[in-house]
Image (tube, rainbow, N blue to C red):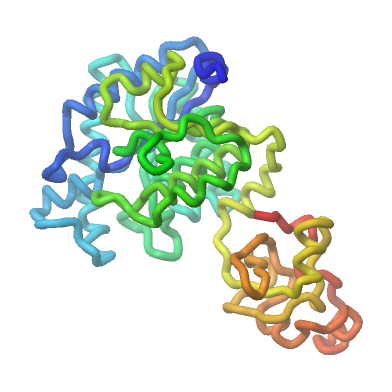
Length: 368
């Protein structure tokens, strides 16, 4: 694989920088690292027609220091306070670093709801397009001050993948304290599209200064590659890492994009929406959805978990397995409790009103 040729085609690049990259051993922001990354980001912008978007963590780390916490707090209100105190400091650092190099930093704070709601999604995309057209570098972070569990991304890895899809990026670079994805002690250089064998190398841990970890980076890489972007996990504290990466050096782990790009709607269902419940289905229904691409009928539902309304996203799962699909339900949880395991004719009689035959129509279903 010719890395330089692969990355040279990228006109829009999203770079995500984690808290672990920006902070030193004491948990304070390392200005030298930040300044070095700012220089490289501006260099990326110099290529004709190239657009660069930055997703930067670090606000909470700055707030922890400013508000004199001895460690990162766990309570939501204290985390929100740290974000409020630190976000202004973070954008000031990036603004100063970019201004020295003739670029404008533009702060954009987003929540999960901004992506789940179509109107807000389009508004965010329009604003980012306008900023990029003027040569500014958007500096995006989760709006931790107002985010709560129901609307929070929970990590900037997931946010960066959504941003990559939002701006139509060809390349997503996630800078981490890790050298890339490790196979035991060795770094994995390239991951083919759709390769699930690497899951066994990933531990379910989180970083000490943030909420992410290799699990969230792998999930974000898959979300980005399914939308047609190449994704990279690279060591952010290595001097000149972005220069080396774009020059084609063997740095980090490259996740190749899928040749079968999913539609924007399918990507939205699979990677943006959060399930409100789970429909456990029998073996026949599982095969029909996964292998034949069919709709899910009420007769195939054996258990209903959670409380949801018509049109809400739900996961589909086999009785002994993890969710294998996600879709928009045509029935509420109460209705499905009443008609699960019944054929469509019986379901209509039980509910007492005409209704579609499908519990989840195939047009609203995505196999994960």
